[in-house]
Length: 124
Image (cartoon, rainbow, N blue to C red; front, side, top):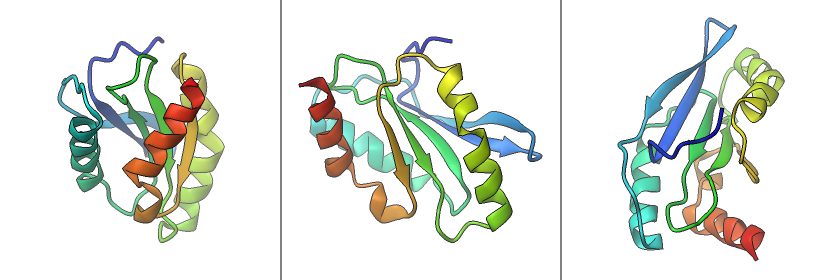
């Protein structure tokens, strides 16, 4: 499946320890500046809990497709962490065009400025 940039972001959960499902999708929107993009990123962060999630995020000010963030909170239950870690390749194979992957273990790792700098480095 190719990312079509329909939504600004998508959060994925593992349902019943067996199936990866879209838990939430951000509203379709185009961001033209880093400031607009950061505001959308922060709205996405507000939706997160301590449960592990896969995140596809479209850095709107970039020309390439979105980037994937694996968010597995250090306070999540160990069983959830294990299932999450063992299934990340499924997400990777399901979406083509994802050139960067980030691992976030707590809210501090979801720093927009740091992540966007890494995305910009990739494009140089």
